[in-house]
Length: 276
Image (cartoon, rainbow, N blue to C red; front, side, top):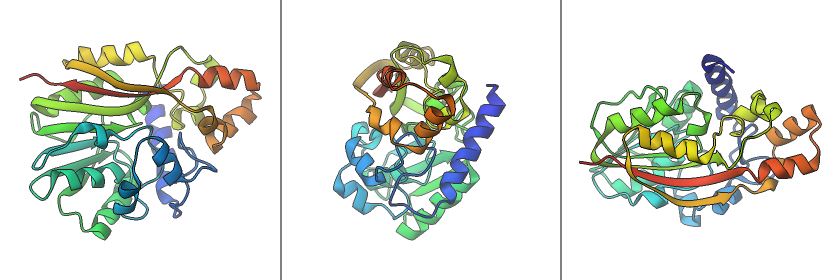
């Protein structure tokens, strides 16, 4: 798919998610949703009960594949950017870590998500959080102005991942840190999945191989790149969600092919440093 078409598809898919009122289950077209409750999914990928209870209702959409805030070791007074902030879940968790003297900026390209996140911030009285409309390939943030960048299962959706990491490097201060959770592949997916629109919104067809992903981070200028964890993505989170079912039903995919493809999908937690 062409880059502009990918962005259009992703924007429309997540606009639909943002408009859904229910927060008790992860929404349609996410990579971790369906019959599994959003909170249950969040617990599986590293969030605590305290995390889930302290954020405004409606901010956890069950869209992640890890908990970058827990791994980022945020400190009071730091400035943090969340790439693809959605309804603000990770931003609000980060805000507690950086305190009143710190600042959290959530960037998202979907106006409906930005609107939802701003409402959640107002509801929770978060004075140290702001949300900016923009693409993660062209961040609306000044050079050398940020201490930490986090992102949760979003960069895989970008058609230009190299530009995302270049932009992340640009806005980080010297000594700043990149801490992301994302979906990568151990081997290529079949073409009929890679070219499927539903699979792109569902965080599958946009994913690239793990080695290539890490090379893009290195080429952007980051050093001390460290894979903190990589875990096979549970097959039930693919089969039991509406995106997965849509792909399976449309393409009549055999169960063995599903299992084989699922075994290629890995949730990765990776850190990089912009050296002084």
